[in-house]
Image 1: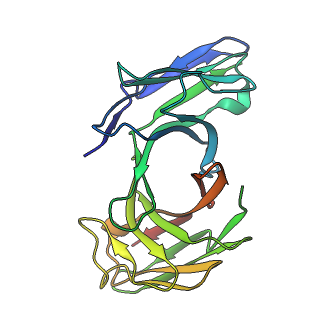
Image 2: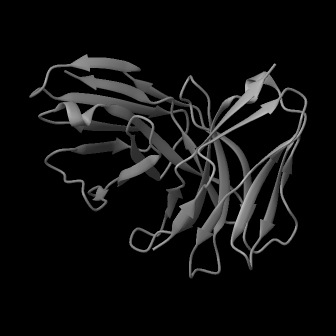
Image 3: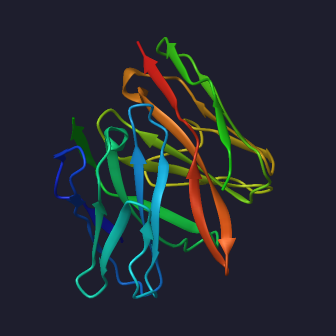
Length: 118
Length: 117
């Protein structure tokens, strides 16, 4: 079974500063995908960034980037130039081919609550 | 990406009653998923709904309690039956969308916040 661990229940960062959210996972799979989702108080789950396990290059999306360490099974999210709108719960998620239905199943971590302080 | 809507956005229900949540997607998708997010918790997959077949339920969830319909490629419903206060949660649907090169990703609806009294 896959597990995803986010060891930081809560974090805070000053506006315009940089913050890194940690995520580790455990799997015996070699082919998988990793995601960071953001859930602001509106509760809409928003895909922030996606990483394919076979790619060595770290994914980036504007102010969001990841540090993917496959051997260490680590997938941290770095948010640069933090903005007030970044305040949200951040969930790390792991996706692997679904064994029965031929589709993909997401496993989520428990989340990190990030507060951006003005 | 995909635009997903859910109805209702929130509801307050009495124990013992049932509520049906609707999920509508703006494009045809094969796989739809229903998740539960209990207060302060992460997301837990309830079931996978593939159009044209019975939904596949995860451990701890049964069809009698959470019947699912998937009548076409853009719509699904989840019913929470015989509700108790422990069913108070946010219920989210998601869809699997191809993003090219044989890869997929999941996008989520806005969720339905359910409070059972």
